[in-house]
Image (cartoon, rainbow, N blue to C red; front, side):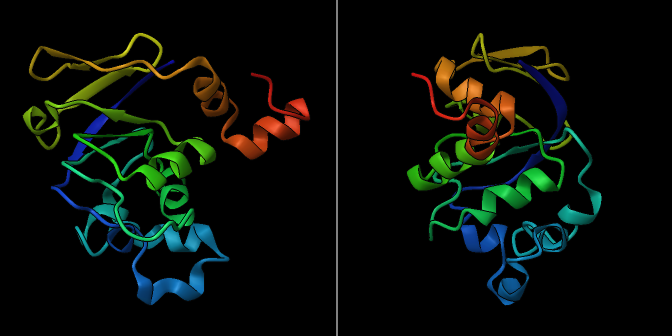
Length: 166
C-alpha cells in the first residue's frame, strides 16, 4: 500500500478542536459539510486548498483532546491520504484506523517541509521525501490494521466479511 502526496505542515498539539472546530458542532451529522472546515482553526486556508492524496505532517501529540470520531473522518473526507506525525494521541490513533485513515509515526517529522512530495509505503514502513531525497523508517502497521485501512474502515471491513478475522 503506497500513498503519495504533497505535505501540509502543522505543529505540535493539534487538537480535535483544531481539526473539527466546535462552532460547527451542528454539522456533525453532515460530515461532507463539516469537512469544508477541517483544520480551519489551525490553518484557515487548508480546507479550501487541500487536494486528493495530500498528506498532513504534524508534530507531537497530534489529535489530542476529545475522542471525536468525526475528526479523523473529516480529514479523510477532505481527501488526505494519511497523517504523519512525531506522535499521536492514542484515542485519535485508534479512531483513525477505525475510519480507514492511515497514521504514521516518525521521529523525523520536523525534517519534512511544507510542499514536499512524500511517498509512504505502509507495508514496508518507509516514508520517502521525494523532494529532499531522504528516507525515513517507521514500524509497519500490523496486517490486521492494513486490512481495515484497505477496506476503508472497520465498518466496511465488517460489512464485507461479517466479522473480524484475527
